[in-house]
Length: 253
Image (cartoon, rainbow, N blue to C red; front, side):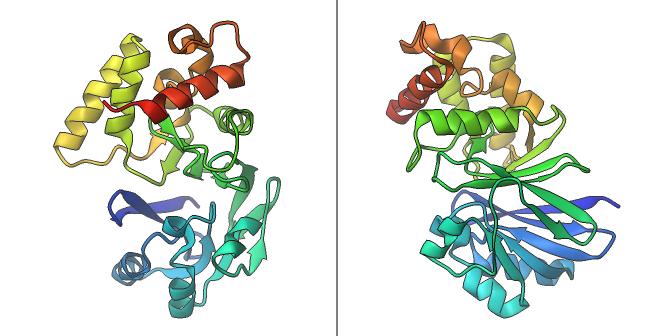
């Protein structure tokens, strides 16, 4: 039976995600950006929370762990780095599998934003919870890792099936689109940017996205093709990516 995903806004620009294994009726929350919102949504849905799945240690992803666990008894799963701010019940890393009823989440190493960042991938339903590694039309800042690490992580995600639904943790797409238009004039990108701006004007979310859409229109995944536009012509792919990331960091549009 499939995995049902419930998405809701948290904090100023985060998304919360609850995922329910329909075979068992058990649910997981992916990260804990705002404990009150998570517990409210669980009550309204009537879902039983079994797991907290952390992608990385930042407070807007793991800061609600203690309160959600105290209210639900859920098992906290995540990379070792989460212990910087909260205890873990189970430590996982790339290659591990986390089971929620009949759903198996493959753990994919996706460091770069933080060194130990991970992604949870449900291959049966083609759903990926990517935290702050990959965004719609963007990617996470390199707070701890370097360009080579992040590029390798993005390539692992890009290797997933094109129809994989990607649940990223922030609504950054409009600003990402404005930057993308400054470095890429591909017609598909322009069409997507127009659709994004229109959706945001209507107050609609731009998450989830898909791997195929990101490969076609995300300047960070397209970095080698944009090398000449960011002063990285002739450079290695990860260096071209680094140049695109640096351009985004400096972008004020």
